[in-house]
Length: 291
Image 1 (cartoon, rainbow, N blue to C red):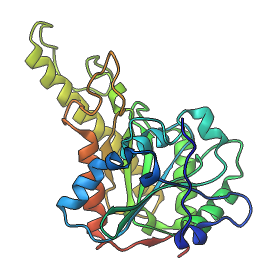
Image 2 (image 1 turned 90 degrees about the horizontal axis):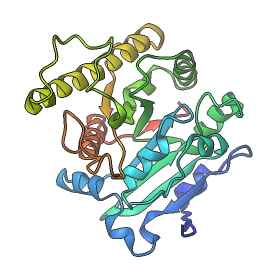
Image 3 (image 1 turned 180 degrees about the vertical axis):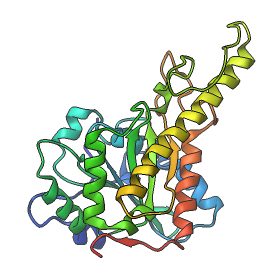
Image 4 (image 1 turned 90 degrees about the vertical axis):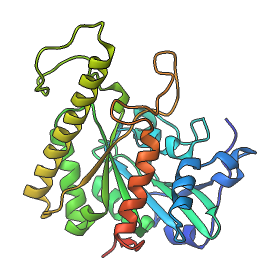
């Protein structure tokens, strides 16, 4: 893979670390001749909505929850611009911004990757402090959680509590929970979460497609309800968080159309629409992580 071109502007200067992490930045517009396709779905959505403000997205989540996969999906250059894999995530010691300086005329889009929460190799309190210093202001936070993890685990609750302690209840108003690896949710196999009756004959493909769709929607709702209940009990918020399922972005032999999920034809377009909608809800203002 080609060496990553670095971008450094005044915003990047403001994001530089005080010593523990060093923020790095990749200019997506300078990646070979592929810049025309960079962030094409996000560009389409922002253009259709007449967006005129810069967008700063912060990715957070535990180690190995699909942050890098989601970033590569949003970048849409067909390769791993952000290195993927839990082992890579564990080695991350710095934030890394992926920036298109002019995705639309006078509109910069920055996606900020952060080290994984609940990583035993990192002093998490120091990481939170440096994230405040480096990220400063963000338009929206995308919190990555695997959809295939059916319930909140203990380390999930620790990560959520740590973020709440660091940023307070206002933080959750700017969070969209992205349920990653949703392609791997086996809705053709009934489990304890499902409430449907007898399954249709295997020959009835239409009935099976509808059953899989209903199961998928129900499982997303259960996951959302579980997390919202925790936030209400422990994070001083009465608002219901927004949830969006997300899949893989690379086709393979078993899944030639990875953008399709049981309840939607293009999860990436749905995610981009949700991102814009949530940012618009706050009038394109930014959350100051140091407040």
